[in-house]
Structure formats: structure tokens, C-alpha cells
Image 1 (cartoon, one colour):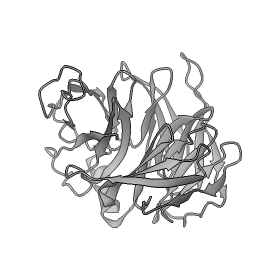
Image 2 (tube, one colour):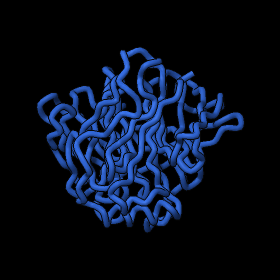
Image 3 (cartoon, helix red, strand yellow):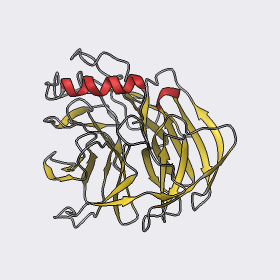
Image 4 (cartoon, helix red, strand yellow):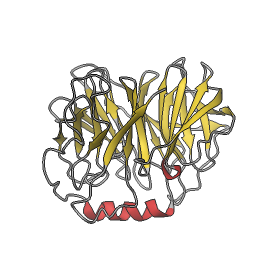
Length: 323
């Protein structure tokens, strides 16, 4: 999730709607349930009315999860059949980026609440809530890599590290890792957006973070926080960069207000990248995040320009071919 004047207005609207009821537990699939082959799967998946999606996580079995910016609810949908339901109903703080850990838990970034939630992906039970930061903050996106879960804060130049713990006990000690090195500082006060989407490098040894303030991608050492600007070749851009997805050595950059996904081939260590192509689709509606599964890229539409004061407003997750 990246900042702009329209989005700043959205944040106020989201706060006003916090706690409003969703229209129902199920959202209709946009097409009939398929047989499970790529050709038969629905390529547009509606999310429930009154539920504004932002992040996405997909299990190996093809179950996708997305959180609502309105009240923090989490929606679960089968990518093969298109059948979905509200997994856990939120009570106020928004859900922004989210990822699955190896123990079947969802790690959810809490936006301007500064919180991190750990949610059981099967039952929807909230297992733990951590106050990662207080004051002006926006805990935005998350990746599971490099010894735990790492969260970005778009208003502060730091990453938050949550150890995964064990299968029965989530990690408890969140620590802040200040960003340094070549990282361009974000002006304080919450008027500008800095770090946003986060992923791992292809070799798994470091993190990749978008800095929206300077439209650049950085490789971050998870031990020290030292950032090195990734050199990108070609006509691609990370401007308006929101969510990141890495598959092998391919990086997908979801560019919300550009209505596009730019694709790069990365060096193993993430220090260099070469632009490959740009994915556009008429169904993109301020896309924010994406995840790859089953030969397709599933892209979340946050629809920031929609009238979310209307409880009937809905959005979607759409898929496009990976290659």
C-alpha cells in the first residue's frame, strides 16, 4: 500500500467505517466452479461487499487469504472453485499485508494501529497481537524469510522482526531494525510514504524493500539493516510500487496507481535486475499485492477510488498468466 492524495482520503474513510458489518459470510465466484485445471479456474474472484482487500497470501493447496482495510476482517477463498467465506471478522484495526508461516498461521500487518496479529489460518482464531510501534506509523507489508517475519513501516525507517516461535507458540518479542546504508530517509510525520512492499532475494539471504518516497528498490541486510539500492536496467519502474512477489529469480512489482505489474529478472543476491515486461489488464483497479500459484499471478484490487462509505461496494482478486 503506497501513499497519494486519494489514498490519504481513503484512510480517513476507512477509519470512519471501522467496525461496520459485512454483508454476508460468502462472496460469489465470478464464474462457475471449475474442475481444477488452469483453464477452468475462475479468473475473477469477488470479495464480499463492504470488504476492501489489500494483501494476499496463498497456500500450497491454492487457498488464498486477504485482509480488509475497512475493519481488519480476513477473507478465505478457494482459487480452484471460487468459493469463499469470512475467516475472522475484524473489530477495528485494518489488515494490510499478510503472509502464511510454515505453521499454518497468518501474520497480519495492522496499518496505522502499529499492530501485528497472528491468526490461525484454519479456525480464524487470533493467537497473538503485538504492538510493534506506537505513534505515527503504518505497518504495511510482511514477508516470511531470513529467520522470521519482517514487516515494513511506511512512515518510519525501520523493519519489525517477529520470530516465528514454534508450532504451538507464536513468537513474542518484536524488535525494530533501523534502515541505514543507502536507504533514503522518509520525512517524519506521516505525510510521505517510505518502505512498502517487501520480499526476499532469490538466494534467500537478504530482503528486498520498495521505497515509495524515491521510487526505488533496496536490498536490505537482515542482520544490520544496511540497505543497498538495487540497480534496475531497462524501461521498467518500481514507481507506485506496492506489493512484491518473487518466484525463482523473477520479481513482480505491483504498481497501484500505474495499474500495472512490472516484471524483472533479478541476480541471485538481489543487487541487480533487468526489466522483462509489463503486465496490464482492464480489470486492474488500483492493484496492491500479488501472489503466484498454479501458473497464474493473483492480483488484489484495493479500488481506492471506490465509494467505500457505501456498504454494498465490493472489489475483487483477478488472475493473469505468469508467463
